[in-house]
Amino acid sequence: MKTGPSPQWLKITEMPRVAWMIDGMLEAAEEVYGSLQQAREKPHVMDDLAINRVYEVHGSQLEDLWLYEEQLRRFEKEMTSADQGKEIDRLTAQLVKLRGVLAASLKLADEIREGTLNRIMEMDDGQLAIEVMQGKRKPPV
Image 1 (tube, one colour):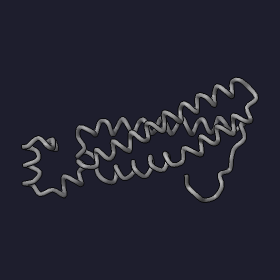
Image 2 (spheres, one colour):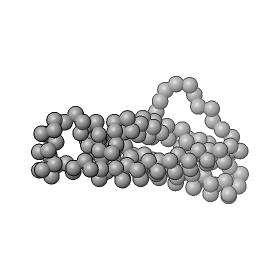
Image 3 (cartoon, one colour):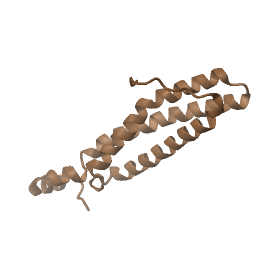
Image 4 (cartoon, helix red, strand yellow):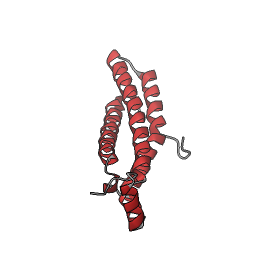
């Protein structure tokens, strides 16, 4: 949990805006995770800048999820209809899913980092050739 200014909690009338934020974060996180999965087999297509951006954005979002969880708890105390309760349940499930996708993206970024374009460029040509010949590294094609 970050320290700093206290959050400004929203009234339940703002739930559609919070839903839009949560749904949007999940959609974007799934898109990035899909890109990382594709890059897993060819990590040399990624550079450190892209991987660092994943760490920065997904790490920050993961740290801030508690804000959304607390906001949903506060909405729950204010709810006046069954529909609001269903939406809170849906958003809570979305946050669980989002937490998993963010964590998986960070783990995959760690894996990919070892084979990024930057790691390839840092290697001696001979060292790279040996690793390719030994099957330790796929040829960067």
